[in-house]
Image 1 (tube, rainbow, N blue to C red):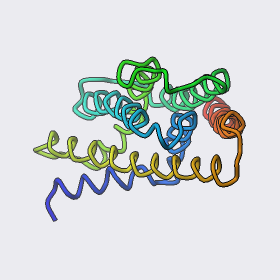
Image 2 (cartoon, helix red, strand yellow; image 1 turned 90 degrees about the vertical axis):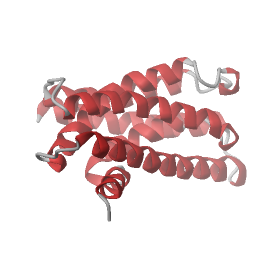
Image 3 (tube, rainbow, N blue to C red; image 1 turned 120 degrees about the vertical axis):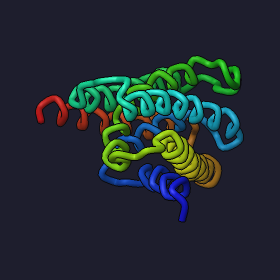
Length: 196
């Protein structure tokens, strides 16, 4: 297997690491307001997040950005909490009126991606070691992360579709319950990181 394929797989499977479940909770909060029919909008949203985290992941991994890991551990649950609170506030709004690319949620996702990218960088720096070709590995890892995220998002949209259509749950109720749960998890993580 090539180095590119190895890092592609590492990026893909890193998303499914249950020890780093904060990323899964963030994706859940990010996608909850959208129905399966809005999949293009969700792909644009998740790709905005990927662009943000790819930038800081590259800069931090290559040593161009220094950061305090403890601060990032606090800020990551804050991004989940803010996303969840925004979902609760806009639970009754129609998301189909938003532009596909230059929407406020996309810009917010890209901004939050900058924080999450720093969280990924310490893991990737350990993997790279003294690599002589970090750019190829960075690219492969980011593509793997994006593919993993898209799979998770597809699962979230599928579950949402089943709950909304088959179980006939109101969309507003789905958003309130799932965003409330994601916000609760984020609050627990935040308190753990502040007191730990």
